[in-house]
Amino acid sequence: MAQIKLVTDSSVQLTPEEITANDIHIVPLSVEIDGKSYVDGVDITREELVQALRDGKFPKTSQPPMGKFVEMFDELGKDGSEVIAILLSDVLSGTVETAQAAAKMTATKVTVINSKSTDRAESFQVLAAAQDIRDGKSVDEIVAHCADIKSRTTTDVLVDQLDCLVRGGRVSKLAGALAKIANIKVIIRVHDDEIKVLTKGRSQKTFIKHCKQLAKDHENNPVQQLSLSNVGTDPAFLERIKDIILPENSNASYIARLTSPIIMTHTGLNAVGVITLAEKPLPEDY
Image (cartoon, rainbow, N blue to C red):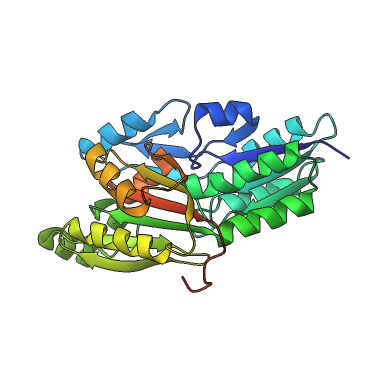
């Protein structure tokens, strides 16, 4: 059986230790600030992007050029290895389509998986695939496992400021202006084929109420992993969210880190991605 190597993109939420331990290869996306392009994770850090937002700058993002994927696929397949590329949702980026096109231009056998997610939700699939590779699972088994992981994952984003969503075209300018005047907060959920607004309100109490409902929804389907990926959010607020969602006797793993510059560009300052992996599949319409 050919060796399988693992590729993902830089929107994923992985610690440096996880990347090294699992031999994960990352294709970076790019961020543009004031007309200058930066490669995510190469010449701009997460802390620097937070500061740019605090300085009132509005970055733009761009997906990797096809050549970057072809180059990586060629290199990883030199020894006869196959490649599995697990990438951020096509709802958020054209990266999946670019990788699929690149897969047709390389001699390496490549399987592209649309994670239908991003950030830590995407990493749930990446880390599961890495373990499957160590266990000698086939590509088909890994694809099925990723689909199972996706069925147990939710990605909700607590958006504190709408400026970045407006500039990114996901919220109209009029709606954004009115929301700013009214200090409106929104909560969005990443679905397979859309980004859906779940609720809105005038204060962070809206976020707290939503997290309490999440905890209730998981009473009979415990959270195994929780991530609070954020954009410079107050650590005390993150801790409060964690305490609401995870019961005292929970054995769930927990991570709270700055999200990638790619995600920050769309969500803006103080946003929090509340990302859960449940024990069992969630209802299809959840």
